[in-house]
Image: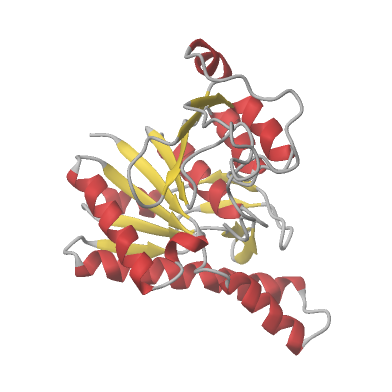
Length: 271
């Protein structure tokens, strides 16, 4: 039996119908014989809505309170998805980033993951329960809640996959992989079947918004294979893996200087 960590972005869990489709996707992965850990972002544009609300309350809200506020968005998603899985007869348990053992540096709004102690995640898996982890957040020190900045849920998923020695981390989003250029602008753009960590980091630095750059760095450091694929529908997407392995498999050559926008993804928000 293999272990897969699946991350679903904000657009994939934006409403009740999409949450139920994600639950069905997770159920299908379990039926295929895999253990699954799920990481979710906040629903739709809820992070931006919370930031807007904070701005109406205070022109300069305290950083600590901002992190407390924003971390609520992912907790909502994780609890609702756990409910959706339970409705399908699949036992599930929502966990905050702190409960999942994500440890971070103490910088509010831009914390970095320094390690993961996923004891409660392992216990849930051992009991046949699907852990649904709130992304984008962790714990600094003994009790302080921190957020990881834009794209932080990608890093949460990769960090959990590394700590659990998962077989694969799937970033499930509204695009079907990584392209050589934005296919909306470049008709001949091709989807990579595989791409190396270094090339993916260059694309992310150049403006590609399929994966957060920090998550790619973490994946490369810990050698976590990452597959970018569509949240709904079929398709293998793009595997982000060791540079040598990607080159051996004959992946289309990436552009030497990636364009400012080189994927079909929109801004990742707090994903």
